[in-house]
Structures are given as structure tokens and as C-alpha cells.
Image (cartoon, rainbow, N blue to C red; front, side):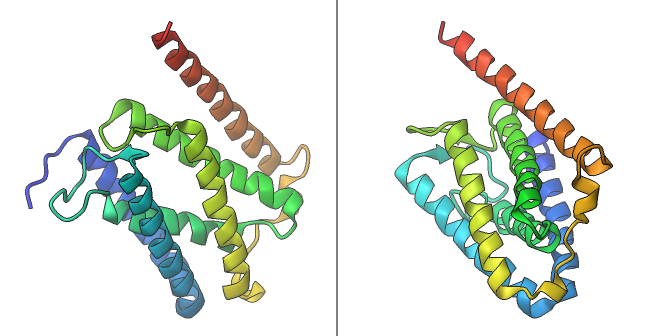
Length: 199
């Protein structure tokens, strides 16, 4: 193994370690149900990524182990299942609050992906793929596994965020809106920058 210690390496290793530790913590709460959810979401994530790469939607110029796979196997194995576990474990009970909760996760995830796509060689959009496609698939993936998690993980093993904290004027409301407004602003800035390149 010969790793080049550049920004791609640091980001990849940090992402794998942080999300692996977070996943282990949640799985430890109930190894059977959360372990199953982790495994299923990891397999689906790897398959989807493989299909999209095969079609040519995007590529991963830099990978920790390029001789093993054409995609960042360990990042997909840890990051996306961790977000699934995080959502299923802590998402509010009612959909009125569940959607803003996932909205924040999707926006933070898309911010990270867009930053990686524009500032590193970790991911590169290719044939017919853009930010909107990624954004859509983030929602599809997380909401499907919110449903799957509801079938696998019992209510007693979930710890939903207190919805009172998300009500208007409460700290959770401010945090959600700060993240959403900031990421929407940055998305607009990004799109303006992309458009200016073609004019």
C-alpha cells in the first residue's frame, strides 16, 4: 500500500474513521437490528455506486486503494450507512419534523460532495450528471432507508430528537434554518460560478 498524503487522503481517511466510529456506536446499541440496517444500506450503496460508475455518470479519480476498486469502496461502506443509522436512530417521529431533519443531512452531505467535486479529485461528474442528480439520489437513498429502518428497528431502540426543540423559536429551529439558508446560499453561489464559466 502506497498512500500519497494529500488533501484527498486526509479527507478520505478522516471520513472513514469518523463515520466508522459513529456507526459502531449506533450498532452497539442493538447489534442485530442496527447491524442489519448497516449491512443492507452498505450493500445497496455499493451496488448503486457501481451501476452509476458503469453507466458513466461520475468517476473517482483519486481512491485510497485504486488497485482494489474503481470506486471509493471504504468511504461508501462507512459514510452512507452511517448517515442511514443516524437518521433512523435520531429522526423525529412525525414527518412534519422528520423532513427538516433529513433536509439538513442531505444539505450537509451535498455541501461535502460539492466541495469535494470542485476542490479535490475525490469525485468528478461525467455523463449527464450534475448536482441536482446527486441531490435527488441523496433524498431517495435516505428516505428509502428511513422506511426500511422503521421495519427493522423497533421504536424502543430509536431515540428521536425532541420535537419541542424544533418548534418555531427554539434552538433546533434556528440550527436547522441556519444550515439550510447557508447551504442554499452556497449552492446559489456555486451555480453562479458554474454559469459564469460558460459565458
